[in-house]
Amino acid sequence: MANRKYMGKSQINTHEFIYVDLLPDVKRPRQFNANILFVVLFGVALSWFIVYMPLNARQEELNRVSEIRHDLQHQRALIAEEISGYRIDEARFDFYNQLRLIESLEGDFQLQYQPLRTSIEQRDGQLISLNYDHFASTFRIQVSLANVFMFENLMFDLLELDFVERVSYDNPQPVSGSIRHRATYTIEVNRDAQ
Image (cartoon, rainbow, N blue to C red; front, side, top):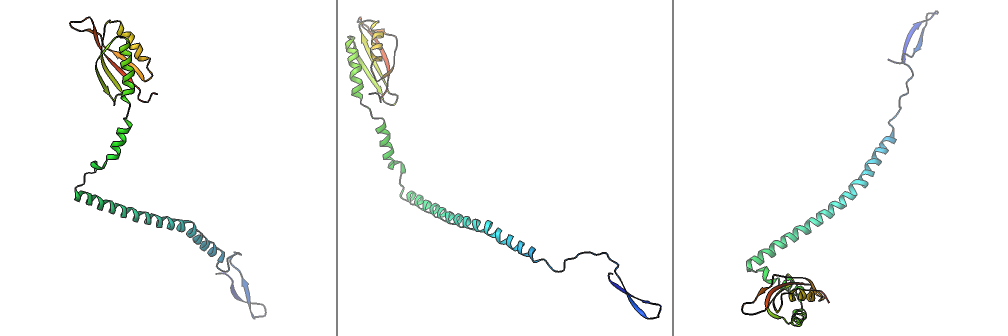
């Protein structure tokens, strides 16, 4: 134990107190350091403002959006139930999209047919049949010409038309009981050509 006081006898036979310090000098804090308490409290308050306040705002926004989502899902389920209760066929109400599809397929058949007919008649040909596939943008025409060599010339005449992209024809076959030959042309056209 530190700072013990011993009693000893001196030469005069009187008791005297002798002070003996048995422990080395160690500096100890005398009181609790209040600065540490202030730093800890400041750190807790700062973390509350930095973490909790933004998190709380985001949590409130998430709750609000979740409520709206839940309400909309419930409303959608009610509408679907009402539609099924009335036995409404939704495909019947898709007129607008179907009309838009048809409008995109619109083309002027006469403007493309007339130059084809003129080119055939210039080569002294006869148009036997005509088939127009609007989805594939192709004409299939069957032509009768007097000479086999005229089919190649007619193909070049058709290729010179602005709206024609590609022309092919099959082998000309002789028409029975005549000197004429018949072949089928496949003509791919561009509907957007001017």
